[in-house]
Length: 272
Image (cartoon, rainbow, N blue to C red):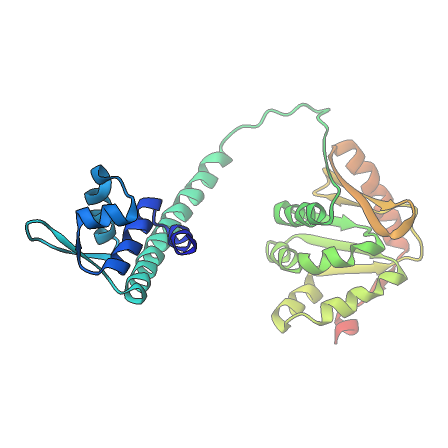
């Protein structure tokens, strides 16, 4: 049963797996003997054996009656793998072309928006929060202003690739951090030279002593609110993303006040 499952896992169906294993055991055989041993229905055995031949697992002797021989598993599986690899690569190339075409086509769709439109989503678990943050940096078009919580360090670590891609797109990223968040420089210093160079140039960081709240504003239209755990300020309880231009404007003004009062953190100097 385990061998049948392995063969099914790589792409054979249940009948094909059973017939191939029977042939390996029986050696050169006619269809009748294979169907008896494998319990593949007799009405399907020839179709199954021909399918195995097409996939490179079986050789067929065109005699009367036909005889069948299992190809050595190592050879058959290697050939099958290379064939499937080529098929998948072709499929991915086609899919990529369709995706790019769809991107261009869907850009033309006109979205009707109400001026008072507000929409919010929430992330609670650590994995949800990481997906949340990744999507934010993946979608941002122009700017991000963030006062991150202390407990944001693990999330920032997984965000480095998305942050550098955002920088490559010309996104302006400003971080207002507390002195406890100074560990940020230690995290950044462990990046590869190319990534580190982008972060030095693309991140604008300032220090501030205390914050009443932690939040972010994305593209002047999306607000990110961080909710700490009530019993442990170093743990996150939830993150809320709110699409509200009015709220984003108000919080952006608050951010600018704090930003102007903050101490500039020179990443070029800090990271060497």
